[in-house]
Length: 378
Ligand SMILES: [Zn+2]
Image (cartoon, rainbow, N blue to C red; front, side, top):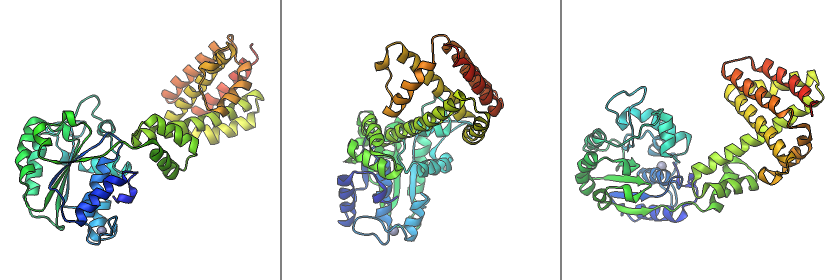
């Protein structure tokens, strides 16, 4: 991970780079920042910079043997510990080492902008809460007492250090205070209050502020190629959290897609044009797959319900992008208090049928025919 891949945080990057260039890397540091601020990504980029053999003024080279291993998060002198718990594949005595493959894939998929809940979802741990336990502490101690394999420094990254349980923390305290030679601990935490005071007092603090919304907006435009208005809305809602901004962006992108699809579908239903419908269902709806077909129907149902609000003088209660409002304005007169019940049960039944693996092409064709007829009931 390069510093240049990290969103914003120029001040923090500058301090980290300076500490390496002036050879005053503290041996235990605490990166404290809210979710989505990029503190884990910063710690990884920092670790890579420390061990890069051809480091530039502002970033790692990205190409030396050390950097190449960092690119896959598979450097033998880079160690991770993080919260874990039991799941389907690890039924007892969970510890970070048992989840390293999933962990690397997880970080590579989100560029190390990891959220704790997303991590738990990846592990499919259901509602269980994870912890960093004494087995993690023992394993990391064993590893750090060995000589570095390839690099000058061994680096241990402890993600969500507030999840260290008391026994694990106590085991690590001495190591944090007097680490083996050429060892750096980088602790990541979102919540200083939950962090054990004994751990906090043994680290040098690096505050990672929440991202300003204009920085998030620009990053969305650049990374997702979305328009400025969409990026602006997602950035405001995200309140400094890059992970949330991406979620909002993907939601609105989905909504835009469903909205286009739905408008097309309704046009074909109106003129009940069988060839157009067959073509549309085969090319646009069938390839979506079951989950998205259900979401699409739920989206459609919502449009019908908004039409009823529109017809009953509650336009102000319908919050939608301009383009969808314009469609609704023309569409609403075809939805009435008489046909809404029929449409609602039709869509709900279709969602159930798709859930039960029904033939999507037949279901959508049947729906089209019925909608054509329901539009005549007003
Ligand atoms: Zn390098």
